[in-house]
Length: 84
Image (spheres, rainbow, N blue to C red):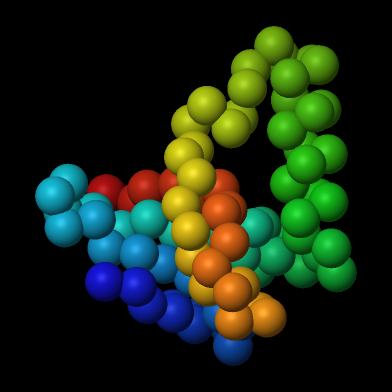
């Protein structure tokens, strides 16, 4: 099941994982909502680089890639994270 959630009138792409019984949310969409960034993809990329340099942690290891419908209507892989 794929779904769009609204948060303060901004779209957040989501997907229900039937097997694990949890929601997955597009990290880029959540970054846009929380940071109000005009370029959330670049914001996420720079944040991953900064955290890796400063803390030695890879944020993307906590995320997985899933194909979700992009603004252009095509299915594209994007980082997603779960919410239990």
